[in-house]
Length: 294
Image (cartoon, rainbow, N blue to C red; front, side, top):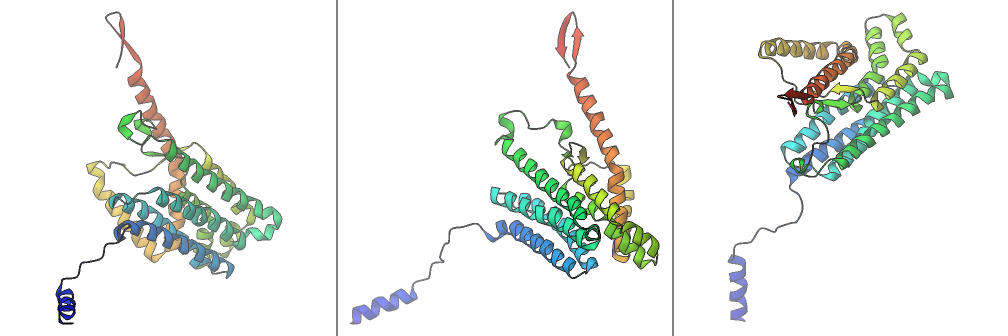
């Protein structure tokens, strides 16, 4: 008995080892947690739309866009990128930027056109799904090692998206709602009723859906370099926009949609210029009777 008690006391005095569990660290789960929060925000936006709380529904779609802009960058910063995270992000984007905006607009105005008003909503959601599927297919087709073969896209096209991205498409599609809320706050009821007309929202949904699945090159702003002389004006402009966003959010969001839509032709022109320059560098040059590539 004495030996048993002694072994029991020694076992209690022995320092306890910390149990080790298999699985990812919490830091690697943060991007997926943010994606889940964005998904919940999109679902809640749909719920507010059923309750005719249009301001809250529109604000939550903006929150979804902000979360979508952060979760991918956090995943790369924390080295937590995974196939599961990419698929989860695509499913969340489809609901938040494909289903939710179309359903919000249908409950807000397009239901007045009866069955015909649902057609643009259906088309927009389908275009969103096709765009996300094309994006996932491009990831699968890319080489596992970037240095093992040719890059999936030319160097000059690395700073461009193919088509309008899903968050920007949702913002463009919700422009009538942003504008109507702005005009109502300013007391311009006539303009608010005009932008709320089902024909305007339906046509805009069709156009934006087409832009999402198009091959139109659009700036991604991921590696966008700002000249030194324009850094201070850019910071001042961003500060002014944030100030307007906090004081007049619907005016800032509607203006942002107009600015982004106006940038699309310039984005295409920039892409074509870079493409011409890259092709000119690859043209054969005659040197001493022989052809060499520049």
